Length: 136
Length: 136
Image (cartoon, rainbow over all chains, first blue to last red; front, side, top):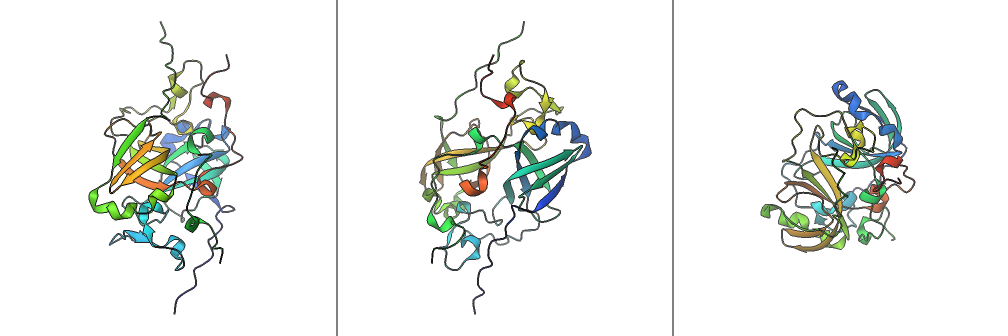
């Protein structure tokens, strides 16, 4: 029997606390002037041995098998996650954000300001199998 | 005498060739269904010893000194660059893209599809010192 795919978890309202090494506190100055930041994190608890070359997006049996680099699957050669999150607060070396889809304790490897003109693409095209819910 | 800041280089029209390890060719399948991809790269030729805590954006003396995590400066604890680029072509393990602001030979560490609903923030706010050209 096939397990039905779980509905995607809504991470938008998940609030996370990011603790940056205290020696780097000053490097966080001015970050509070941005509404959104980019968080790069190392998905250290992903088991990717052997690494699959293809996966079904959201493990949904109704979606096609596609190359891992065409997905956001955590199973990838370098398990780096990238999220655009809302910055709610910065206090010294602690950032409070919402929308970070990382499990608790995941190491954060970089923080960048989100720059709409640089980080977004207004005319982006994506295939139908990336849509949150199937039409059928 | 102070050197005037160089005008920012326009990378949008720069075309780059990304060569992925040939053993991972199949993992690139379906990528051509996306107009834009995210490239993470390791800025291996950046000299960041000692690491500054603050920099002036675009090395412009008229911009304020701000924390490095508030900038896209290549001088950062983990020298990871992140670019949203247009995918022009995929041929086997070779991607041709435009808009990649990395110097020739920079190691690419991950490729992800650009998903507008996940990667962009429609209501993003940024401070005035991030603007491409000063008003004055």
